[in-house]
Image (tube, rainbow, N blue to C red; front, side, top):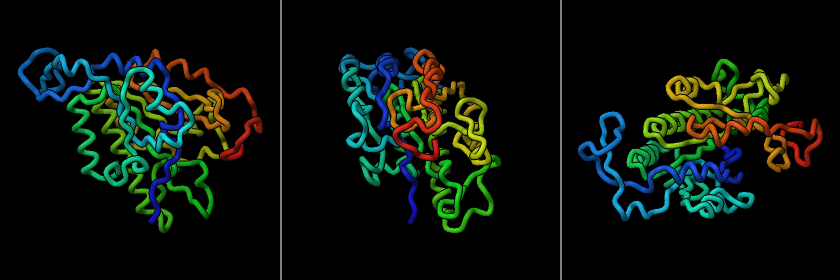
Length: 278
C-alpha cells in the first residue's frame, strides 16, 4: 500500500539559534498536575510553576515529522539544539516506527496530551508534502488537489493515500492551535504555494493545490494569529532552489520575519540539482 512520502523534513535543515533562544525562554519540562490558581491559566486550567528540580531540566523542543536526523545535513536540528542547551524529541516513523505514526489517532492523542502537560518549550512541524507536490501532475503520479481542494473523483488507487495525508494536515492544525493556546512557540514548514503572487510563482503549475490553501489550514489561520515567510533554500546553501514557506507563531516574528530576504540569486538553471525544472 502507498504511504505518505516523507517530502522534505525539518530534520534536513539547521535550526536558527534564535529559535533555540525562544525555546529556552519557555518553561522547562513541566509535568505538574493542574492545581489552584498560582499564576497564568490556559482556558479553565490553572498550572503550577515548576519545582526547583524541574527548573534544572533542559528545555525540550518537539520536532514532528522530523525525518531521521542521522540522514540530515550537519548540523541536524537535534545537534544544533543540543549545542544551544536544549533537548529535542524527534517524532517520525523513520525514528520510532509505528509508535511514532502521527496518522494514528492514539499516537496523536498522546502527543497532544504531552503538549497540554507543558513538556515542550517549542514545536517544529514538517507535515509531509508529497500529496501536494508540484511533481504530481502526470499519469504516473496524478494531481490529487487543485485550487478548489481535493480533486473529485479521486484518481483510482490513491484514495487511502490522500485520506491519510488529510489526517496529518488535520493533526498539524490541532497542534498549532493547541500550542498557540498554551503560548508555546511553533514553526511549520511546507513547500511554497506556487500559485501565490511573489518570487515562488510558477504559472505552469499554478493550477495545483497547496498545503497552504487546504480548508483545514485556512480555518486554523482564522483562529490563530501567525505569520508566513517564503524563502529559497538555495539561499541557505541547498543544492536545489526549492521555494519553501514557513508559518510561525507571532512570538517568533523577530526570528523568522527576516527570512523573506532569502531569495534565489542564481536564476533559472543555476542550481547543481533540479527537482522540477528550475
